[in-house]
Length: 103
Length: 274
Image (cartoon, one colour):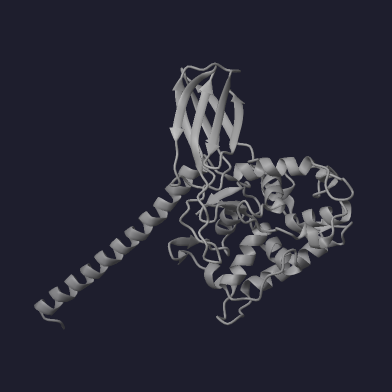
């Protein structure tokens, strides 16, 4: 089980700014270990953000995204006290869901 | 006296030299600026927060055979008090009978209070990705983050701390190893660099403050959060000094010297570094 994400969501004017830090190795599949064996690729493939059951962001990621990725985006709408949910799935099928309250 | 042509040549030469110097200074200035911009851009999403969050959980968990959490650990301001504690460390702890920096104190709490064996407590002091997550680095991230904004205030009232400070100062200027290096060789002058990294001049108040208050830090190039003990350990390696033992008096003395010199500046870590 992966470590939790760190999510901040703030209402700015009429839109919500979301900042997410994810805990992930994001192994490219290009590196070799000390024995010369390739370290298998392991990275987040899909990221989905939902607000009130509606998808506000959907992304497909690849191995070029950095370790411990930081994602910032904003969407129109949102209200203080409401929740934003972020889900990621990696290429091993591991999944992590976290949510934050809009402040 | 120079004839007219020679004088004109000399003047052109001087002008050329000046132009070269200016462009060199500009190139260096812009690199430093760009690195500063890079750090500012990353500061917002500093992954150090992930370590802080994990450290906070670890702090509250019952640990070791004693099933004791760190909430019984006294960092100098009373058992379990974390807020502002880092800004006053290293300090003398009568229960342990020695001056300790944060890492040493945490090790002491793990062994003396939680009953973890010394060997187990020292496992994974430096993390390595998912294979070996370091509890120490997470705990340090949490504790230091609770001092963010607090003014550094390391007191030298205690004779033990004074002694460590003097020792640290001596070490800072001590030249040795295969390269005849001291800390001051790299950190005793302004505008020294290793490759493109500008090195802080730790002999000035401003330099010492800026450097000390931004450690621990998330190292982007390593994808890890590194503590002050790691910083010193790696400086020793770069100087080709003998390996610096974790939690040793040598490490604590140097930390005491650097921390005290940063007094008065607001602590700003855990920061982010390239």
